[in-house]
Length: 277
Image (tube, rainbow, N blue to C red; front, side, top):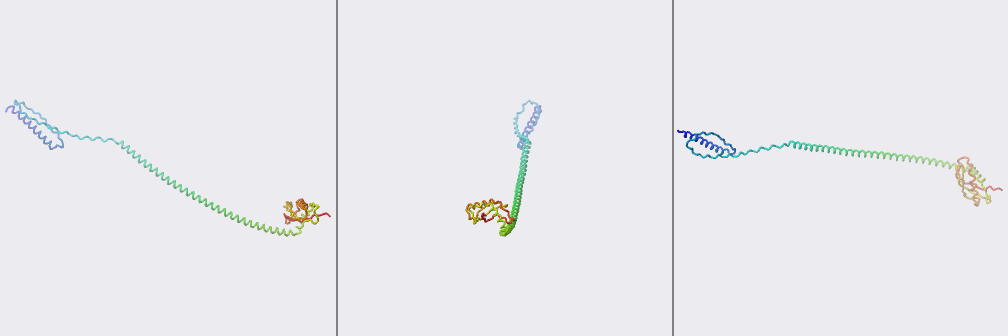
């Protein structure tokens, strides 16, 4: 065998090997299409001797282009919102604390309102009771005052009755004494003394005669002072009447009686002039 023949065999074997490898790659690609497989590339170095006769030209089949590998996008990193969460938690806590404080203040306000109403009710009841006590005491005082007035009135009426009885008895006794005195010689002597004093002070006018008679009412006070003279009757003229009145006033004070029972504030005297013969 010559040298060209020896070079042809390795070249043929290399071509066959390449064909087999390419066919295997096509089969494997069809069976495992969902997962693209990068074909294995085997590099080989073919050492040949250049034959004197050019080898037959073998058309080389183009290798199929590998399908592009779709790479999964890497997930974006989650943003760091810890500060926002902290602020949100603080805000929620602040709102919760505000609600709790509001509820506490509302409870305090309601309790204060209850206490205020209770105090006002107690004050009103106490004031009502005080007013009732005052009214009861006022009524008791008024009843006592009315009872005192009634008792005092009854006592005054009793004293008045007793006084009136005593006065009436005294008046009766005095009247009895006066009546007794009026007809007593002592009364006659008392009246005669008064008439005698008036006659001594009487300036008898010329128009009077022995038949002249004047009845005079004399009013006196204690001590015999004359406070009034009235001519009840007189058969003389005006000059005689005026002279009698003047004589009575000139006789003041009148003589005192021998006993107080004989004193009379009003005396009626019959006067005749004492004429000189």
